[in-house]
Length: 337
Ligand SMILES: Nc1ncnc2c1ncn2[C@@H]1O[C@H](COP(=O)(O)OP(=O)(O)OP(=O)(O)O)[C@@H](O)[C@H]1O
Ligand SMILES: [Mg+2]
Image 1 (cartoon, rainbow, N blue to C red):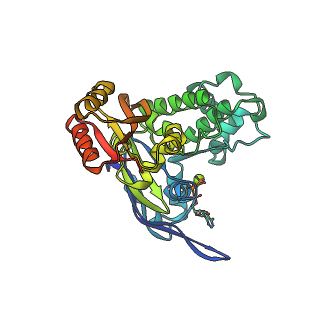
Image 2: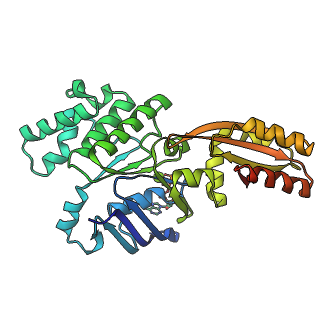
């Protein structure tokens, strides 16, 4: 058994349109280890949906190979591919339930089309509804359910074929924060209890912080950065990653408030060091002005992390000394723009 349940090797995808060719993905390499919860983030149009659709061959890559649990999808027969796809479940932003079928028939549907008889399919579907906490809604119709409940039905349906992998394309984007939290808890639970590897596309950074172990940042069809969430979020190396991660913090309000001349930096406290004393000690020591535009603490994978956007003095030399001082105190310092 390969440790990497999903391997994308040199994947490119070119769409041919009336206006010519469009390269949606270019030379993507990504390994996703078994049992992980892997986030994929990027701006609208970056290629996120195209990328996950390549994982189950809903989209066939123009170049490169997709290897699922050691099997290269491109080398399978039509039948082999159909078989392999059963091990990959998928859920979507708008749930995609069959409106004219009730809940139990929706969940049974993938089993029924694979030839399971109605009695057995309903028995399995009832177990799945139990897992997602909707045992009492078996006979309801999708329109009678809230968004969160509909997504639970979709998750139960995706689990019907005992998948090894669950792909989620903006699965919580249409839900309110509280419902999002409960769906994320359910996904985490499924990941831990059944060892299912989960790939989550999202534009909500909070989703990544909340449950992902790893994250890849995609920009204009390229993966620009990837790794453990705690690393990427506290030390984003690329401009694209920084923009996404900061965009989330107060929608960049600091950007408007800060003076053009300020030397804005983003600082991250990964240790337990209380950050106010460090900043006030620094101000005392160097006898200078430092503006705090934004301060926040967040949990990344259970570890509390402090984050601040501060404006250092214009003076390059002084500003460099302040950055060195912070770095010495074990604080991560990055240019904020
Ligand atoms: N079938 C298609 N034919 C032509 N172009 C396509 C097709 N599917 C996607 N594209 C283009 O590929 C690019 C990536 O699309 P994709 O849907 O993967 O983006 P995304 O990152 O999921 O965006 P969003 O966050 O808005 O969902 C876009 O420019 C899109 O217009
Ligand atoms: Mg998309």
